[in-house]
Amino acid sequence: MIAGPGIYICNQCVAICGETLAKTPDTGTEGPFEERPQIRPWDDMSLEEMLAHLPQIAAVSAQVEGSLKAWVHQARGRGASWTRIGDALAMKRQSAWERFSDED
Image 1: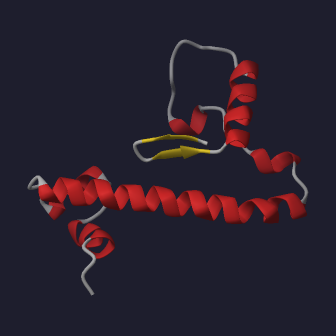
Image 2: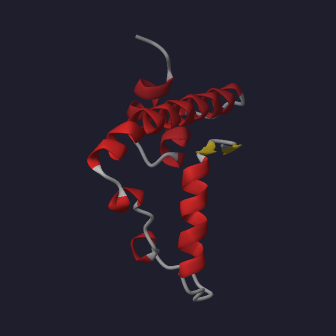
């Protein structure tokens, strides 16, 4: 597992990225996301292999969500408004508050 601030990548995904980068010609520029090579590991997997990966993907998602919440709480502790947090996350202030405020 490779991990950093808000980043969690399993060994299999790192290997797939390496293979993809080795096959992708370097154009020297980065285009819009839609034009970049897409890594689709499920193309070569059976349905059973895909289903076996779902718990791992869910666990990574939970880790990322927990990390994001920690970052938001740190930003709030430093005085960031819900509006600024929402803007940073490309969501409305109200959506940011509902997702991260921990208030019922």
